Picture 1 (cartoon, rainbow, N blue to C red):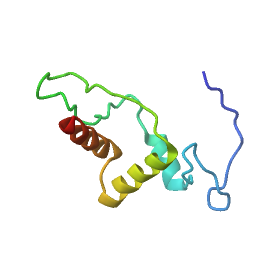
Picture 2: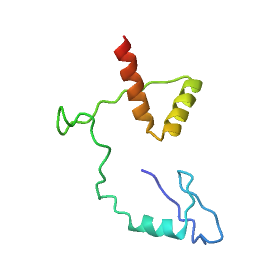
Picture 3: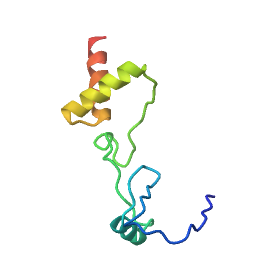
Length: 99
């Protein structure tokens, strides 16, 4: 369990405070965080398996890449405005079609 220490009042107009993701905490951010309801379920990405097996999660594969290849694929995804996962799926489909 994470324990927090009360650091006292912070003037968000004069002090720069950041969350764990590097985003600056502003008054608006703090108000939205105070209103956040962790019990509200947010939908995830749609399953890629939904047509074949409704209600099932899509299988995931994880693997490591050399830094240069990872950089190139991230740049391509960014340049095309596509999610990295879409680029990876397309690359695997093309590779498997050739072999």
